[in-house]
Image (cartoon, rainbow, N blue to C red; front, side, top):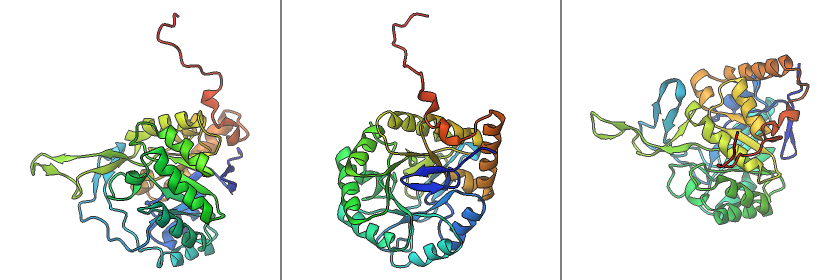
Length: 314
């Protein structure tokens, strides 16, 4: 067996698979279930200051094996109610990372203090939801926005801060650099890609909100490209997100520069058992290739790689 444990933002994970925020994280029991199924850690739903019911249905459009489009509207019970769910997961032994969202740097900072008090091991800042007005991408699309939020949170908490950045930007790597300079200890890349589906019979968008976020295998190359670019610009650990459904997908992200990965749409399609399957596949692949430690392969695809110039001759 290969050594799959990795360190992210000063936290030792038993393996590199994290349950992605927004998937299977509605309750303490579901978080604990993902941990029991084999996750190296679990990330909560994104929690805000007040309860939010989310958008009306339809909120999800399935595209078969290649992904799904969703616009949930960040539904959550609010920070006053959610700590009891975290307590349930922690009592089962789960390593829990708390995800938060806010409309201002000041709101993020206040939420961070309250989330830290629940005993989570780190905070993931949702700076990248593509469809919630006043949140996510709207306050995380420029380096200055990212810097302001991260800096405000870092001043208020002692746990590591991880910035989850958007792909819906001209320069995701620039956002990651801003987060690192502001004090973030890790980067999650990416969140969903802004997308739309049209019902041609009704002549209207399929989702009630219209614009949604595309996830699943269809965006794997987008996520890999972001991780690849970010790895060349920052020194803090990267968590790769987007389209991971098997061990080879996870290994691609690691070789692009990620130390850990988040699994979302695959869990939505197969349930939490997919976490254990991907861990086994990753272990089998490393063992077959004679690799003793996963950590030795972080960024492996960069080693000795030089981008050829347009006028290069064979």
